[in-house]
Amino acid sequence: MRKLLSLPVKMSLSTAENQVYQNALKYIPSLALNLMAIKVDNRPDDFLGWCGELIRLCREDLNMDYLEDEQLVPLKKLQGVLETGYTISQFKMARIAPWPIYADFIQQQSTVHALDERLRLLNHIESIRETALADLPIEDRLTFVGKHTSQHDYSLYNFDVEWFASTKGAKVFHLLIEQLPEKFDVALAHIPLTGDVTYDHYQNFVKDFKRIFNDYTPEKGQNNTPPLAAATRLLAMRRPDQFIALNNNKIDILCQGLSIAKMKNTDFSSYWHDMIGTLRTFAWWHQSQPSLVDEPITGGADETISEIVNDNVELTLWKNRAVLIDLFLFADADLALNSNYVRMRDKAHKKVTSTSKAAPKKRTKESAEMLVDKALMEDDLPEYLQGKRDSIVNQVKDGKSVEQAIGLIRAIFG
Image (cartoon, rainbow, N blue to C red):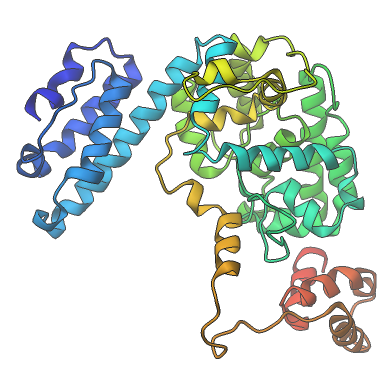
C-alpha cells in the first residue's frame, strides 16, 4: 500500500491531476492504518489506473468494521477526490483521442453508463424532434426537457428521461414550459436541425430563452433567473451532436475535465465560448459522418469491441457525439441501476403482498375537470384563470389539489 500511495510521484501529471493527488494525500493520514492492512497486488503506472485501483480498494477491500465513526468523513472525501481524478484523467484522453478511440471508449462504457438505455432515449428524442413542444403530449414534452414522472409508463418509455441532465429541480422552468411551450418553440427554432450551429444561432436562442423568464415571471429574483442548465438540456436534445447537457452537479467536474474556467449556472457566454468552444477543438468531434450500412456486422466472442462496432452503431454515436461526452465522467456500479426506468420496471414486476400500503390512484381526467370547473365558478377568481383551465386540470389529474394548482398559476401569472 505504501508503494501504491507514492506511485503518482513518479508519474507525469497534469496540473489538475497533481492537485487531485495533493488533495487525496490530505485524507490518507486519517485512514493510514486501515489502508496499510489492505493487500495490494496491482500497482498501475498511470494516474487513471491509480485512481481506479484506489477507489476499488476503498470500496471492496477496506474493512469497514474497523473504521471509527470519525473516519467515515475523510473516507468519503477521499473517494470523492479520487473520482474527480478519474474523470479528469479520462477527459485528458478525450481531448486528444481520434474518432476510432472515442467510439471504442463509448462502447466500453456501455454497461456501467447504461449506454443502450441512453441511446433508446436519444432515438426517441430523434423521433419527436421536429414536432413543436406545444404539440407534444405531456409525457413526450417532459421527456424532451428531462423530467421523469409516474406518467412515463416503463413499457412505453423504456429509458430514463433524465439521462444526461435532469431538470426536475427547475420549478419555474417547468411551470413556464407547461404554460408557454410555444415560447420555447420560438427559442429552439433558432437552432437548425442540421448543419452548423453558429454563435448567432445560439445568441438568438439565448435571447428568447431569457425573455420568457423576464416577461412571464412576476418578480425578479434568484428563483426566476434563467437557468443555464435547463437551457442546455433543450439545446442538447435539439442538437445532441453540438451541445453538452449540464446540471448543477456536472458543471464543476466538466470544467475541470475540459481544463476551462469554472462557470456558474447563469453564465451563457462561458458555456458557448469555453465549453462548446473547447469541445470543437477535439479531433473526434470533427469526424465526418460515418456511412450507413444495410446489415450490421456481427462479431465472434473473441473479437474486440473495435472489431464488432458496425457503421450503424457508429453513425448513432456520431449523431449524438457531443451529449455522449457524459460517458467520460466517473460512474460506479450502481449508476445504471438507479435509472428511473429500471426502478419502475422492477417495482412493477414485484408481487404485491399487501393491499394496505397501495398508493392511491390518481384522479381521472374527468374527475379532475369536475373539480376544477367547480372551483372556477367562484365569483372572486381573476378572469385570466379561466384561460388556464387545461393546465389546472392537468396538475389536478397529476395529484395536486385544486387549491395548489390555482396557487401555482397565481404565483406565475397573478
